Length: 351
Image 1 (cartoon, one colour):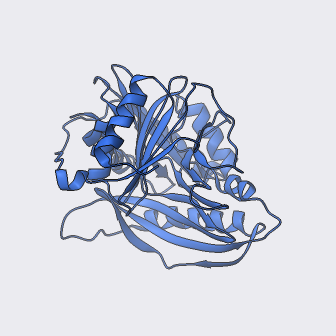
Image 2: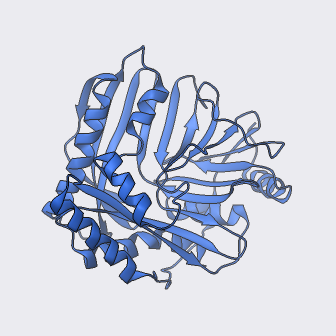
Image 3: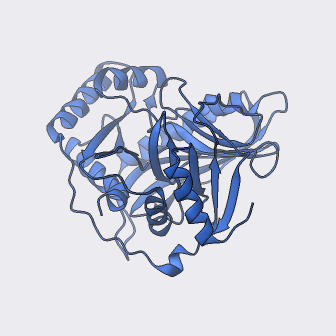
């Protein structure tokens, strides 16, 4: 159902007040905003044959699914209304513990087959929970080129994100994914200079994706490595295209890609084992995936890696950030990269 933007915001607030499960989202480059919600708080099993929104964890299978039975659409005019958010002064804690993990990973790479591991950090910020519409309008104003969402389920909590990374996009038999790695802060008027470490890190991601796609697709093509901007950050990116072999289910391809070396490492199982043994917290939906399935036509999926995200609690917010570690990593520089990445969500939740 199409409604005007003011009614759309009121609908979100009413559903949130009733403590019903919902997600409000906007695709990159689009003006349309979407709201899906349930009329009960039942946890539904993810169904890739139906239309809806999925939120899937980094590890395990405790996914959340919202059917598209209750679907409202509007056209966002928040940019015209104007929301201005400045730089947040919030800083990250736990630096030494993170540096120790990086050094441990580098040491293991020198003696074992581990080539890359993505180490993350969860920062707790003492701040009161805000209405969903506040988070959503901030997200789509600050990050119009990202996939932005606010998700709430009374049994799973509230999550928000502005993620730039496509995990899996399909229409019919055509597939697109991307290899995204390397991070530099955006400085107006300047282009980033990339190191061999960053190119190596991104190439590991590309090679692994191509290897995983090979048995399930055909006619694979890739772009050259390019620099793209995502909010206040630069990244290295390679676009990857393929044709799906008819007999293979979309779900099989999706789980052959998740988790990519961009969020886990390589080899996958060794990197994941290191993460689970050393991060000392549950990533939950951070570095899982999120997105819409069969919403606009059958066999069309737009799935994103769940990056630049935060978990909203009553009096506290967890902001999640991470970075890829290789033998060439400089621990201090990796910490600076986390500080830059954290600003994406700090701007949304701290003000």
